[in-house]
Image 1 (cartoon, rainbow, N blue to C red):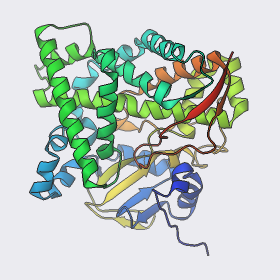
Image 2: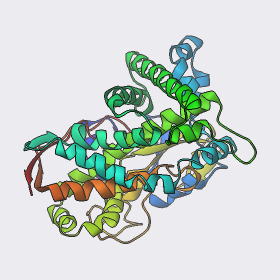
Image 3: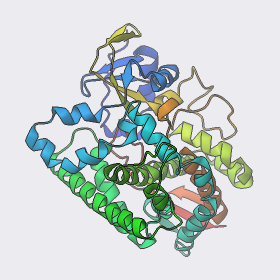
Length: 408
């Protein structure tokens, strides 16, 4: 009989490579109770996909009950986090989720995102030009991080020179959004960043009300649907924060994780370098192989059974997207990177009503970034033996990725 599964999500070895333990969980305990998280953990492809569409038994409204459970003094301490994150559509159920997504989708849609491709190419080229003459750099701090941030800033009409402030505020907010319960001072940092970002967007929103421009922010500010519905002021601010935060944090990890995977599978890197036309399929496989989103969270709305376990109303459920994407029940040889793989769609962006609103933009950015990197450099290799991974269940990414390069 095998030993009981002891999942320590913050163990450095597990953060670096969670996949062997995910394989055990899929096979031995697919509906795993984690005493550390006080939550259920699902790792099989079919289970994760099913949860994404089960709006009756599982709820995405996980922040509101958490905020309601806080003592008054603690809730006041994170008042801006409560005020704005409570309005994010990702933490809503229908009909509130349906309404917010419908409004945002009138502006932030596939056509507007795909139309950004020339700007993605320009920004990516500009970032690489700044690295000319360097044979070593941090691929996250100097490319994978600023690229998607600058792209979403361009869409919203945020000035490029605000990059440093925007990235700092976003990183500080991630201390709340991407972490499990952490030190109080980090919550204070996240609260301060949320307050600062809200003020930043309120000023921009006021400016667009006075003088609209040809940008997504102006379109959001002046949006009215057929019934006259529009975003409230707080919803506008919350949506801008969400689009900026979600629009670059995960894409940074996608590009960095994908680059690391290519360096670890040099034959696949060579294939993509030789044929940039592989990029669309390559991006999907890189998203599957080691995606930027480790997990999504649901709350059990109705008590029910799964794999012989009873999930009780009010309990949390972590659906492990990357574990599902490596399920051999869904993919042949799932631990092998194969840029020509053809099979079922990965679950990296989620599935169903809550599928990531910005996935067309993330795909475009990956399809531009990888061929440009491989065209610019004939050799790219890690400059450290083991990168440091972010301590997060929600995000799957590295703190930094130093690389050595040689120009083509």
